[in-house]
View 1 (cartoon, one colour):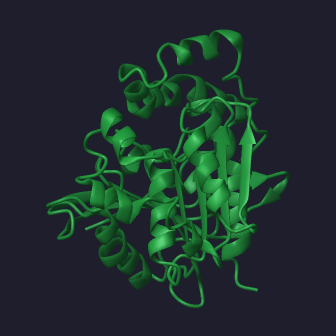
View 2 (cartoon, helix red, strand yellow):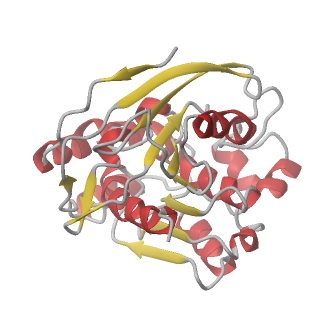
View 3 (tube, one colour):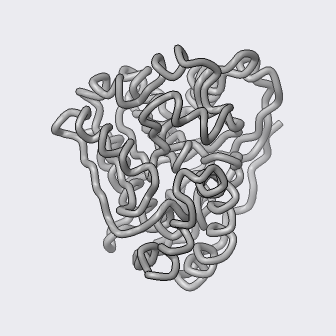
Length: 311
């Protein structure tokens, strides 16, 4: 049974900087970035970028505006994934398990899990942020274990089915993302791709999407050469290619951010060309690393809050 956790402590700007440059940066290297370098997709480029400052991203001036709300963590058996999965729900200040709120489904990157989906922040701290001096509209945020299968269905493991058939219904039974409240999707790297895939496949369920440095492949051959487990078959890639199915986001507010020196930039550029004109696509200085991810979390959460709040 899930149990409420004590409210997370306030996070100072100095602490966020330390987390970004330390743990988060190491986690990023251990994930997709390491795969790209090891596979010679971008041989040595990450080292050169670090030396010449291409990856230097100013830390956004943000901090919790009040003591974060509580977090509830637990596990459930996922029939779709055929295993037990962990999750955490973070509530905004002044709210808790009794509250009915909009919901953000936050998807982790390669090598991550529900505990590491965000960079430098817990789920409760994320929804307690103020951005540009303005506090976020109240919403809850849930993270969950999705494995390393790029959030698309594989034989014996269907993380997308877990999201739509198990996790989101569980949250709705708790009053989160249940009409009239809305549901948004967000993710980083592999999770950014997963958030886009979720929004494309479920346009009636997902009201807005924000993807940070999404891991968008331009072909099945490229994906397989770097991560053989990303898609089970070429047909699966075609069925779940975020670029091919971008038109499904015609009525879904979308924000995508990618670094100028991100090796996935060509895929994000292809996605940008395929997206409706209403989509917000931002290319900015940065790489595929924790510094860029952390800098883009506040504006992504602010974007979602603006589109999930009932009007």
